[in-house]
Amino acid sequence: MNIAVIGTGYVGLVSGVCYAELGNHVICVDNDPRKIDMLNDGEIPIYEPGLKELAATNREEGRLAFTADLSSAVIHSDIIILAVGTPPLPNGEANLDYINQAAIEVAEAMNSYKIITVKSTVPVGTNERLAQLIRLHTNKPFDSISLPEFLREGSAIQDTLKPDRIIIGAECQRAAAIMVELHKPLTENIVVTDIRSAEMIKYASNAFLATKISFINEIANICEKVGADVTQVADGMGYDKRIGPSFLKAGIGYGGSCFPKDTSALIQIAGNVDYEFKLLRSVVEVNQDQRFNVIRKLKTVFDGELQGKVVAIWGLAFKPNTDDVRDSPALEIIQYLVDHGVIVKAYDPVALHSFQSLFGIGDVIWCNEALETAQDADALCLLTEWEEFASVDLLELQKVLKQPILIDGRNVFKEEDLIDTDFIYYSVGRPNLN
Ligand code: NAD
Image (cartoon, rainbow, N blue to C red; front, side, top):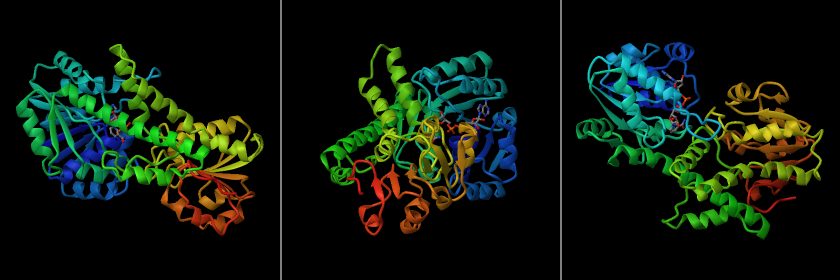
């Protein structure tokens, strides 16, 4: 099939490359010429394991191209996939300016019948509204498809090529059948729904996962007070098939470009129809507070006095294996520390530059290596569970720190790892060691 993917970010780029890998002809479009130049030079603007190699193979085999020329991509394609950003507005609602603009540009370029597919996460009713918008700008025929995306950054290729399910929201059966055909090689679990239900499935899924995370974080906070160990609790809970083991990892809360914005958007979607989503409001509130656990623990070890302390931060990305720092807990934690007179040294294996472009480069000592970051620090806070941190030599680490204080925001280390060390160790929902 001939496919144009509009928006070459985390979702559009991975999807485009993977559709090409299935044997389709794919043109990926972006209106950021810098991204297109990089891609045409064989570089990948984001960090995603395996993506560079897969993109290169598909380009060499003539199935994948990159362009800033949306119009020619639309003309040469039968299926148009919109994968532009839908970032949050200050009130929590999704900003639909990019997708509106992309839809208008697609409409104006249309030369014949197209299937117009929305992969971006959009509020319920958006596909219908976009169809009206497109009709205002073209008299060519088209069908709308809602194709919500569930990939996770860091394992995006695996998630795209072996998804748990594909959701296809459609009104037209013929267009739905073409989309089923396109996705058949990926999974047997293809669910065809009406368009509004497909849009809702995406928000409901992310809200549910966010709820699981906030739930286990609250259990962790109680565990700390009653002397239980949340990792054992989660393990014991996870064997119950009705609960399942995933998303029961206590930590400093979720971040990233999806859960925070999609939970806020769903609260707004509910509010717009006079429904107060009380449960989800609490999930968001718990998550917001959870990141400050790290600060509370630092205050405990320093008897409330943070001013002038040197604190090392390991991990800036919202999770490992990505350079995405959008809504990363590290942003707020570091800002709080800087505002309270702490000298912050920070390091991340891949997300340093993307973090600096959001946070700014002043106020923090940026480091290029984990032990260098910890050198002479009064405490170390681990905020992202990169493999590199888990395999560090703890005795070496203890030697370089001024004080052996380790706040492990992701429960990376086990008690036995610390047995021969003098660390004062705080984690999440587990007994402290000191
Ligand atoms: P992103 O910001 O990384 O990428 C969006 C891209 O679209 C940018 O490169 C931008 O330049 C481009 N763009 C914007 N307007 C354009 C236009 N008119 N023409 C051409 N290009 C245009 O966003 P993302 O993280 O890939 O997310 C895209 C959508 O997918 C969002 O709705 C998001 O909620 C959803 N989603 C994201 C993830 C994720 O893990 N990132 C997972 C599932 C769903």
